Image (tube, rainbow, N blue to C red; front, top):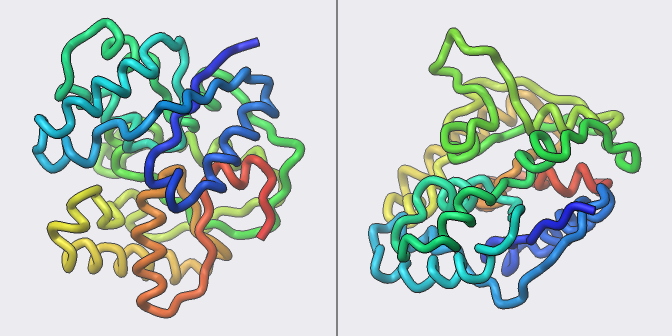
Length: 249
């Protein structure tokens, strides 16, 4: 049996615990022996993204010490995975840090590339979805094609996985891989710009008449959900893990 350590991002732990539970249950359904280190905290991304490398140092080193011995570390967050794999430089360059950067996978990558699962027979989802893939996932992890690379093949790992759920339909909308405006601490330091980007993204999606908005990054969905509430839009927001695990609206 394959063993994997489950890393739950802080914002999911605090605001969306159902996503962490869905991730755990999904991995166990697929035969993975899941280990959950209870001493885990933050990966250090919020501080590092703000340029506060000294403040991020201890957090990153703690994260490396907690997870650095595992062959597979899985997290339902493209942005956390991107940080750990590509920008995890505030802490000491220890063997644990190097192993963690090498062995951390976003949940979508782990399902698509490592387990190579394509069918989810326990799940059905008779709804139309607008699928948003985050900038970190697209351009940091190569989880979907980039529209600016016009000669590259078009692909989407999240869509490939969701296509294994009976009944699901995808709606097409304009500027599909454009940023939603969250951008981590960008949405705090540039609130007005971030909000306008979120409203624009929602407008493109709304025009396509989806039943719900779906992503593999709850941080993007948190931002879009806030924008939707300000505009009095009533639409569900779901993480990909929830649908793959068999959630119903």
